[in-house]
Image 1 (tube, rainbow, N blue to C red):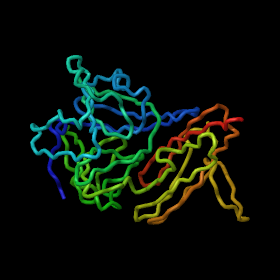
Image 2 (cartoon, rainbow, N blue to C red; image 1 turned 90 degrees about the horizontal axis):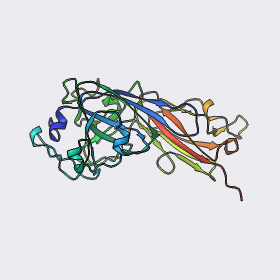
Image 3 (cartoon, one colour; image 1 turned 180 degrees about the vertical axis):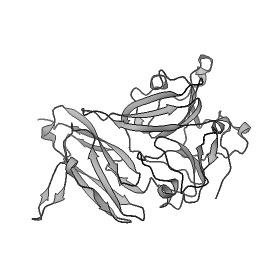
Image 4 (cartoon, rainbow, N blue to C red; image 1 turned 45 degrees about the horizontal axis):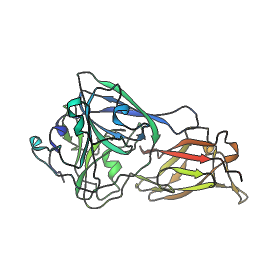
Length: 334
């Protein structure tokens, strides 16, 4: 069911985005990747997947001619629907803002740029700007607000799915309104989700009817929530993969760095468990509604530093792409 044509005033009238990319860092003992955007003049709607450090807006947007940056602060509260763009109210407490102009700086209440969030970025001038953000990737979850529009982005690959394919397994989203920015610079209703592709790094208004915990066609459950944290004592952890789609998928898991030596558990022909290198693991085939519990171990004895981070990438061959941070420490000696 279509639900209106505009949200929150002037922002919904002039937001554009070019497709960004996530680029893995060269092999090193940290979990840094770079997300790249092309920002057009005026408003841009982006979905940030990496955690910059430092995270203050002045540093994150250094060298970028931004006029202002906005994000919705209260994920548990519904976004009020507004038909008339002229009635938009940016003074609501739920909106966090970074205002660059000195005479408006006192209105700034956005003091940190946090990953796994959608941002509205207003660019000054008449030229497009390339912007790169380096940081630790996150695998945080979308916190859907029931019976409301949600400003969200999705973690998808360079060959992404359509909106229809991505949202098909979720009754809370099938047939619901989606808005994206068109070439005109306005929010436009996605009238054919079956032919419109999702873009990596782009944010959308997506309506959620009722409660939802849906994240995508491939449900990846991580121990502890965000990433694989082996610490100094844990030798192995389990990732649970669940194919929510109605098609068979081949899930590929590869490390993007060799600084952390990871292995996966498999059963040999003799019935014994073996631990080959993770980079040698074949794709995991999951049928519709198929599950797999994958045990991953760390070879701590190969660590050359006291603390190392890495990233593993999970894809399903149908457009889903998740980058998972990995942390390991050397075992403390008595």
